Length: 226
Image (cartoon, helix red, strand yellow):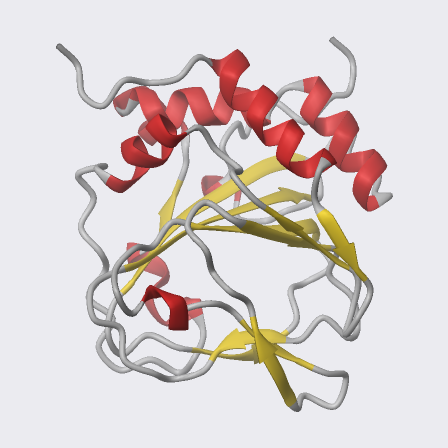
């Protein structure tokens, strides 16, 4: 018996789309959407049990570029190796997902590329306040961490003057979407991480994205046509 069971591509796409449609939109401090129950639970289990060790961070400057060489993108190699990665990738590549993201975020998705990163932060990891680059048509993070301290591991949010104003709840299998812009400041202030802070980042990257090795389907641009 294979473990964990891998949900069908149809089931993953349907639950993801339902989460986006039912998301709560807020416009302060910048427009964003909060989602619940983003993935089927078996898919979450599959991601959490991937035999991929968290990177050894050491000293960091507050950016993920510090350990670029050990970052884990969902690439053709991981898709071929792990059925969970393949099913998730095929689901989020689907035209109906693309149409929904275009409608929800009001972004031009055709010709962009799916980019997903599986993050596993350990003690010592932190992210300085930053804004995502405009080459990401939308930014989405799905929280997959668990444990007694996980309630304190949500994303820190700042106002346009980069003043801390709050922190996302980070509930398991919840998510946040926003469109990068001049006021979209966020980060992860230094604090203890007892265990592993696991997240999945999902983007559509513009067609001129330079780091092609980060793309899920580098030869298959996003399409809204079946």
